[in-house]
Image 1 (tube, rainbow, N blue to C red):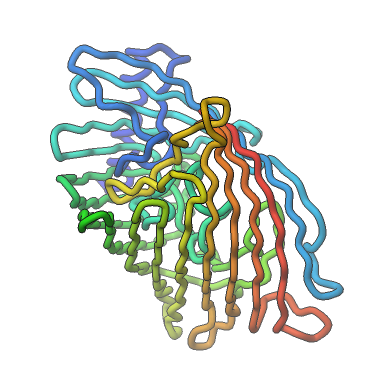
Image 2: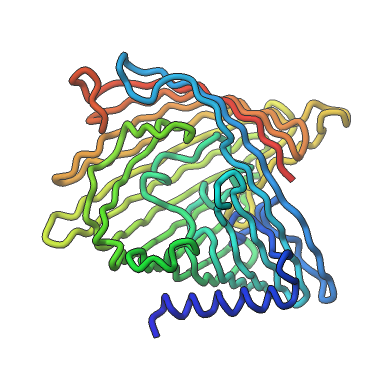
Length: 406
């Protein structure tokens, strides 16, 4: 029996037994992979006799204006719901917990996290659809990122969720995780979508004096199998996701295997935080040269209020203002800067290069409300879209978000 079929049988067993216990209308909760503690995305440690059911939801509404050279497709003003999610967490005795949530604005509803988790002492095991073992910024909940969107290489390199089994070890300031994954649940019955990946991540987050440090690395090996008969593109939007325009991107490639690996670092000292990551992707093609693409970012942020960005367990946590609005303060106010680089030129493949210069202002009045304003200056070379015969040009993006969550 193949690994993929074994995964499907295990997930079917889990689904049948959870329905038998909870009934048809009572699935589980968490949202971001629970490989490390994020404040809003990991259920509390259950007591031996505890059963808890916790609803969870989030709503993010974005507006943006994209300004580029005359004739550039996709420029102009946009507004849209970025995320509208609803789910439930179930915390069970014996160290078990489970989560089901989905994007409710899609028709039909798009399932995101659907998994069963077991944790005992320093060991954690998660089975189901989840974020495959991913690097620092993608491990961090989208409720807690320092910009509206993640660094460019995450989307360009096709990081995302998969269906599989993950196991990890966590102790003090150290963690190691590994897992095997195939396609998302919605694609498991598609005969052409049967990729299989092995994913690993490790981190060390010691406290040195008053500074919380973070060092980590990840490795991902993916065999596309029959999926490799379809074409793959590596591309990215102009920062915001509410436009379909991609100004940087490779042509369609017949890729057999992918290797992705990278290094990550971060530090928090009081109101200040810094983070940086670098990642490489090698796309193996039968009978052709294998291009290697590169992406990375470096960012720094500072709170104007007496707040700090939590960094624990290999993940940045959500901001909880020390003095919320209406309770003796104005909430948390933070400013951030980021340099975001992406290079999709390699061998005979020309996908373009991006230099991104970003700034953000974030106001978190209360635990459940967040307001963000972002600016991005994106300089492109060898862009995928030609404008008046030119592939080298710049784009300015101004965007804002209102975020509600529970």
